[in-house]
Amino acid sequence: MKGNIYIYILIMGVVSYLIRMLPLTLIKKEISNRFIRSFLFYVPYATLAVMTFPAIIEATKSPISGALALAAGIILSLIGANLIQVAGACCAVVFIAELIIK
Amino acid sequence: MKESNKKAFREGLRDGLPIGLGYLAVAFSLGITARVSGLNWFQAFLASATSYASAGEYAGFTVIGSGGTYLEMALMILIANCRYMLMSAALSQKLSPDMPYYHRFLLATHVTDELFGINISRQGRLVPDYDYAAFLASGPAWAVGTAVGVIAGNVLPDRVVSALSVALFGMFIAIIIPPTKKSKVIAGIVLVSFALSYASGKVPYIRDLSSGVRIIILTVAIAAVAAVLFPVKDENPPEKEKEGEDER
Image (cartoon, rainbow over all chains, first blue to last red; front, side, top):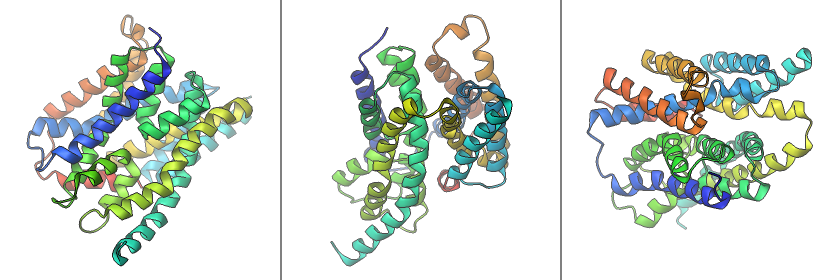
């Protein structure tokens, strides 16, 4: 199925808004169910990791440069670089690697 | 506007501006994905202005690109933006109980990793004027950056586009990797997610599912198994707050 692009964008916006709005307006107390709390806590890590690999090595012209960017990003994150530094370094690694590979 | 609110507003602008600069680069990378998925600059601008979410929009664009169903889109956004539900829940604890609803509805338009981080790291109750100023200083850069990414993606040399396309993944890495130092469980989740995500693109039948469906299934399965095996401790709020602060 190929849908209408504006309906896709509408769904994206509405769901994104509801996800943020409902907790801010409905929650008066802490969520007490331990499974739900744990599940919500772990979801971000699982989903971002699933989306990052192997997509990062498929996004670049050469899979090697993507893999190098992944390695550089992990190392920099571990030694305390911030979000923008890591994102910038990943770009730089791909650019330099592809100058050498080509 | 009261004097204390003016001060909060100025502080919000000061803290929001560097966030906006960072958004420009990452949104540019997102714009490249949007272009590959078939969106024009206006559609990408609209999506960024209304969704205001990095991973969520990236996930949404992949659904558009692969021609997924509307239901798949809704589920995908729910999963990819699940962390904002968590952050909003944490933020709800920081609001004054008598804060009017119109503030709550406005706040909900822009809960992001970075704005959550700066709000949660401030002492005391959340001050709406501070948050609105930070959003004014950073939010427009997100939507404009995405539109520019679509346009420039057509103009720039392949090599530059290839390099910039990893900025978004770099941001994801910077969110998920630092907490792995403190938590072996999170480190395990990241490794297992990498491995299963790779495998799911190779295994017969599963690889025929759209990438959106695969992301949803893997996320729910991995997070559910982790929640059963390693439930989080009861003193929960400090953990949530740390997560936001680490991202800045």
